[in-house]
Amino acid sequence: MNNTLIVTGCAGFIGGTFTFKALSMGYKVIGVDSFINSNPSTVNKIAQKFPEKFIFIEEDLAKSTNQLKQSINGIDFDAVIHFAGLKAVGESEHEPLKYWENNLISSTNLLSLMNAHKVKKFIFSSSATVYGDSTVQPILESNNIQSTSAYGSTKIAIEQLLKDCARAGLVDVISLRYFNPVGAHQEMIIHEDPYDMPNNLMPRIIRVALNLDKKLHIFGDDYDTRDGTGERDYIHIDDLVEGHFKAIEYVKNLKGFEAFNLGTGQSVTVKEIITCFEEVNGIPISHEYADRRSGDVAKCFADPSKASDLLGWSTRKSLEDMCLDSWRAVKKI
Ligand code: UD1
Image (cartoon, rainbow, N blue to C red; front, side, top):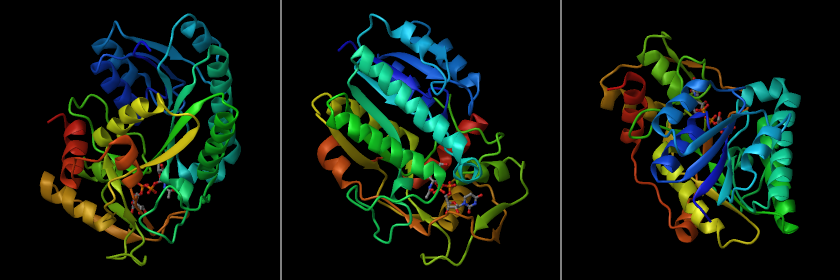
């Protein structure tokens, strides 16, 4: 092991934040991104800060792995961290083929390359979406797996692919099932882009705070939840990223496949997060109720005890930190 990682999707919010932290900790990183769903600015910022230890390859792994193959020849890697993938639930329902092609084919191509190169340790960015509309809350990893969108189906299928490969002894895998990542890391260099018509709640709150949108639409006020709005498990990106470093340690001695929830275990409603954002940042967020968004579930929050017991991981940051840091990163304050 020589402290070197392959990171796919390194230009995205989560992959970029992870890459920044990994480089800060002394890892060398070979990063890959196609820019299908991101832009070069994050990669440029990382390359400027860490010119020695970061190699970037622009490649769409669903189409080819030739460039990555050339770059990794003769290098030993600790692990591959596979963030790359399309993630907009609504879009996936209209363009399922795009999602299956991108998410599945890139994963099989990457696994073939890793297998040829004898990189066995694999960390996968999965999602709480694999639990679908679970009646049991909080959710344990042993919960039923079910899809509520084409996007969700691709996450479930990739986990199955990884289980099959792990059973055959080709890889040892940790699948990290993310709940709702928000916030920004301390250096504030990488953050979600509110200008890029986001679908997720926090960047849409930021759009209202920036006056880019007049109002936030709250999708549904008649769910069976504390106040009628959707309940989720928001997790600070720093805590989420920390879970990956714990996973890199754990996978060293792992044989097979393990899935872990990365969430706080606390549910927060849409109204509660808006109120928290308003209070900590002193900015009113105009909002109005709208119809439920198709494919949304009422509640989704984690039981994170498996990650705590086996990885020695737990979250440290509060909802206030998440609201403060999301805003500070955009405003650079
Ligand atoms: C969804 C997926 C998740 C995926 C994530 C990434 C499910 C169950 N979850 O998370 O797996 O990784 O997208 O894109 O499929 N909301 C509003 N107004 C808005 C935006 C959101 O009220 O303008 C509400 C939603 O109805 C929901 C909550 O805010 O109750 C969170 O929504 P969002 O940030 O989009 O995340 P999820 O839908 O939970």
